[in-house]
Each structure stands twice: as C-alpha cells, then as structure tokens.
Image 1 (cartoon, one colour):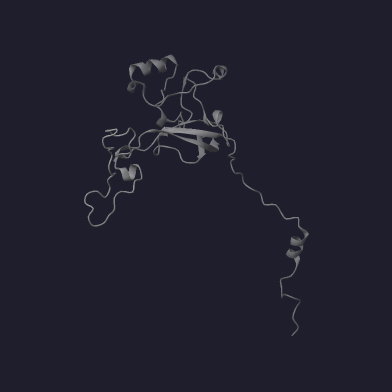
Image 2: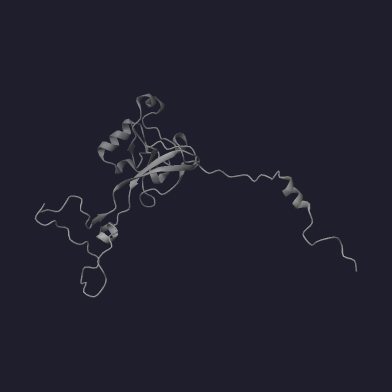
Length: 213
C-alpha cells in the first residue's frame, strides 16, 4: 500500500501539492484510482505488517501526530548534500604531501596507487578522488522532542541528512533503542533541611543590633 510520506511537512499545504496536468499519465491514473483530487508532490511506499493494513485507507493523508509522539526513537533517511568532484584531502581526509622545498605539484596528491607486479592492478575500493556526497544516508537513533499537531511538524533532536527544505523519510528505529529520554523541565523544590532554613532567617555576619551614638 502506497501512502504519502509521514515526513512531508504539512501535506495539506499548497507547497506540498502539484497540479494534475503536470504529472505523467501513469501517475495521473494512480491518483484518479485513489480518488485524490489534489495530488501530492512526493509519494513514498511504507511497508506495514498485514495486521495493520486495516487501519489505513488508500489515499488517506497521514498526519504526524498519528504516527509519532515525544520520546520516540526514530531513523531519518535522506540524500546528503552534493559536493561535486573533490580530491582525496577533502573526500577522504588524507594529509597530502609535505609543503617544503623540493615538493612540486604534489601538495594535495594521494600518492601511489599501484602494487608492482603482484597483483599488478589497483585494488577495488581504493580511496581516490571522485564525486562526493549526493548519496542515500540514514541518521539513526534520533529522538522526537515535540509534535506540532496544528502545523503537522515533527521536532527532532539531532542532525538529519540532506539540505534545507529537503525530502526525508522518518521511520521507527531499527535498533529499538530505549535509552534515550526527552529531557523534561525540572521544577525547583524548596529545601527541607532545617539548617538551610535557619540560615535564611539569621542576620548577616557582622550585622549585629543597632549601633549607639
């Protein structure tokens, strides 16, 4: 069953929707079959156990408050920021060559990549320059701090992959971590220690009675 992504902010807002004429013919038929007049811009397929399929209907918009609550441990899946073609120093944190006399055009090189006669090739996975970023990444074990029902937003503690205004998928934690607790406001409690209470009413040191002239 394909449902709108629960991570889509305010799925009823105009920014999360698009016009039916702008969609390809297969997607238009999908929305017409689900009786959705205003199609969503992003769709995600969420796998559910068979016993939970009766809770949802095809075409139903899932609100954030129906899925998440404060204190839930979640995983956030997104696409990282693309950095373009980068060298080994930025991509793999290599040190580079020495910046002294005698070093020419090798300051930011990665060094040798060969292995002589045996095996006579470059090993797979060799750290070299190339495209950096723009890959699927999962930030695990994040905590839901608050759910804004009126705005359909989820406030998360921790960093999520991707740029600002990017599309992410928020789901339950795979590791089932339960050690994280959302911090609550601590109320100040008056001390019941009689020694501290007596010090409050005692006069200041050296403050004695009234001085006589």
